[in-house]
Length: 303
Image (cartoon, rainbow, N blue to C red; front, side, top):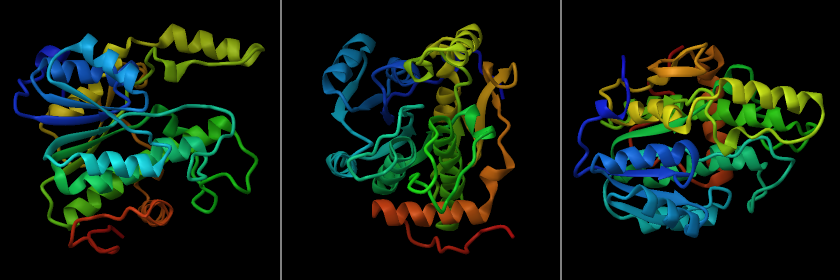
């Protein structure tokens, strides 16, 4: 699997793509290339004015619609507004390392935005998706932990880094379980994962004073590649001929930089019991269930 850049991406005329968080960073870079290749791209953004400015800057066949992943009512309104077929859904948006905040629905903000918002959106749109769902993960999942008994940090002392790591593990478990359910339902749609490595975007801003934030800022800015380079794995995952459950990331410096290639994922993200438990908890929290028939909880699950 190799890809040197956007020039390797085929023409996408007639393809419909929805991408969350497309007004800046890796999301913007991804959307701009897809629109430039002829796809009709829907920019799902929280701030309409920023989304419209991004659409004007990138050109192409774009549409801007409001989506606040931290508000399930907004997610449902957005999904209800899309009635046409969707070839590719790219779950790209995310937040990282804020102080403890709760979403409109009472979820810890990183878990609520990075995972639950996308979980609900995907299930609501899935009957319209014709090709694939791309979920954007993170290298952080390798060192993170998930507690399915306290997903929203009600009992544990809140740790911003720990909560971010948990939300990114949740992205992986979600994509893996989605793949299993799609296969079980006999769907032609595939679920794939991508991660940008270390990319210079607002998501990687390290705030705070003191030695640790200074070291982290130096580390990030020394290793970070551009948002355009960070978008290459997402572009590859969205357009290449890949099997379901593929995971794509940069191929150099332990996945931090480079061209798209198969990426290393932690074994914990393939834990069938944890993935199923997270899915069930997420359905309970969001009220959004897998919409395709034929996928029962034990279908296709390896032992």
